[in-house]
Image 1 (tube, one colour):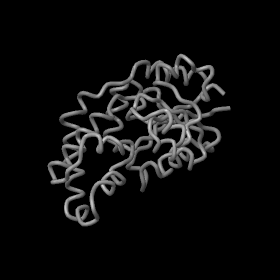
Image 2 (cartoon, one colour):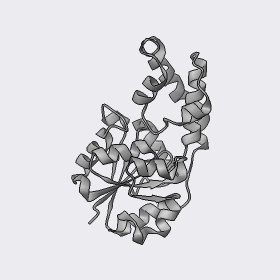
Image 3 (tube, one colour):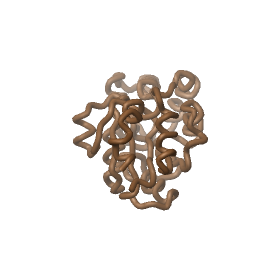
Image 4 (spheres, helix red, strand yellow):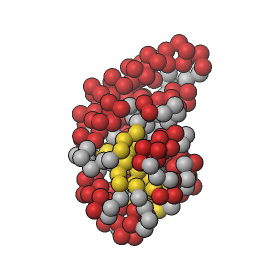
Amino acid sequence: MTKAAIFDVDGTLLDSVDLHALSWDEAMVKFGHDVSFEQARGPIGKGGDKLIPHFLSEEAQRDHGNEMEEWRSNRFKSQYLPMVRPFSAVPDLLRRVKDAGVRIAVASSAKKDELSKYLEIAGIGDLVDVTTSSDDVQESKPAPDIFDAVLNKLGVEGHDAVAIGDTPYDAEAARKAQIAIVGVLCGGFTESSLRQAGCVQIYPGPGALLACFGDSLLAR
């Protein structure tokens, strides 16, 4: 029986992936790197510890990696965070999970201060039992650290939980933590890429998962 549902946030509960990609694209250009929006969007879902090495050489990381990440974070918060909106039916889905007697956690590659704002935007702060952010771990997704940390906070084993995420990085991290994962397509990744990464079920988004709740892993 499922004891806990562990939700990713960006691209899963919130329509924020394109906005993150824009802030990363602008940061790369500002610091002299020729990166397109499409190139910046692909790795969204990983934390900054994985994104910066994806684009910058070791020399560039030493020279301005931290400065660029700080600029990107400030740019996102000032310019794009006010534009972030939840996908449809997000609070309703989490209430349905609660009604089923399943505890709710979020496991995000976002910073802790960003995550608290995200929960407010989504209108789910009072529904979440446990949160884990990139500040709680050494490595972000696709490393399993975030899922391992949230399992520890929940006091459950991986086989007692179900993860919900929108990226192959969510799926890879969940699989390493021995957690079954449900994929959603609203973050922009293809169904085939999510299945190849390990997603057991795929839904268009939170609304569809709510509509099909009884047939989902969350109701097992």
